[in-house]
Length: 145
Image (cartoon, one colour):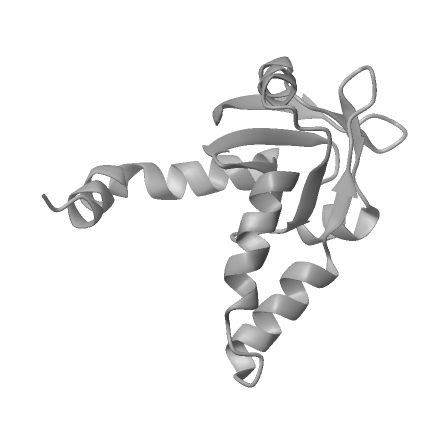
């Protein structure tokens, strides 16, 4: 559903414009609301409402009596916020999420199929530089046919 890599900036009022390509996908899929939360590797995860509900249902099945699922759910859901984009395609990210992802101004917006990831530009470039060489090796391990 969401594919590609886009460079954008946070404006003076703390808003982030979603790439036109992603807005078009959202419109075609009748997505009016997204959920943004702490992601992994110091990025933010952004899900359509439908995908958010699907993920939420998976996480609800984890036992709350076990420490790791309990901790994960607390951190994942406590930071979640629902957002809708305005007529210019902008969303407002809360400061605590920008702090978590070390986002100041320049961001990379990455389409990862069922979700969008929002990265501080420098952290995305570091992640990419540190992982691009192992892409084929990872593919071999994951796609053992």
